[in-house]
Length: 372
Image 1 (cartoon, rainbow, N blue to C red):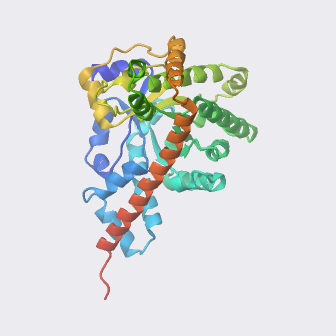
Image 2 (cartoon, rainbow, N blue to C red):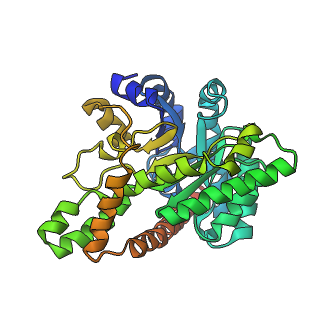
Image 3 (cartoon, rainbow, N blue to C red):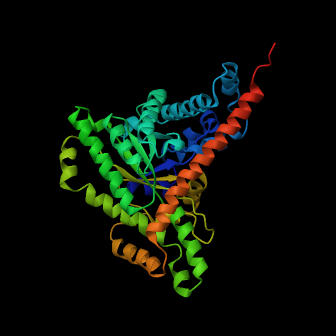
């Protein structure tokens, strides 16, 4: 465990790895990251699985068996991905037990093609929870309009949820409301709230990527001065909203019933612009009771560069508002940007899912037993 990552953890930031593959599991790499780099959770998405399955031969044995059974490509993907999540959850089980269920979590996402279908999302969440069958699983549900009631109903059934693809402050407040509504329904049904957990994945770097592109098109000195500030400002104001909601009267009643706060999770924390410090979306978002899910390159960058540590969020809210206002003043609409990013986020995951279907189908055909 490095000093930098230890300091980050001591500040209340849970370090999760934004990646998973069969090779990470079987080689001992995931266990090594847990032991040596303070990783206490794992997140996955369709892009991650598409990359994992299309590279190397780590899945050949399972794919050969699935091909022999003549399963559909959709079933093959579900069997492969849930197997990886189950095995990763077993590796992280000691962390889950040691933290009372807060960490040691592995996330798996509902089929992104269902992002605008509430009932199908609820059914898929239940199916995934049943298939993985591990208490330290989080089912990822996108924060679309259709996803909000699905979050409530999934939480109400006692299934822990990672809410993904959050870009706007308004939508984030609706996500927290959906979580609290789910807890209230679970409480009314007599469920043990202490066993229900959730994180809200607030996406970071994509906000700068889109806004910086628009600032560059303007090309003025004011536009140049505003570059690289919007994403952190947006996330910091999300934390302000988190503090407000989880200190209010509505939360107090659930708190007395041993409910768990829905932690903010900083997602998309890999820096896309090489002009920025590789650890910017880690260093500038240190705050208690948060999660930072990092690709391995970001994890390594934190390890090498170190981190100043210390709360970088509370006390910055006025400046954050000023940074977003500066962008609006230049004619860049915050509402338009976050709406675009949500639509693009869903589309990107659908595209990755389609690529996953195609590459898995090709592997099933390659490994199918010859007739006769």
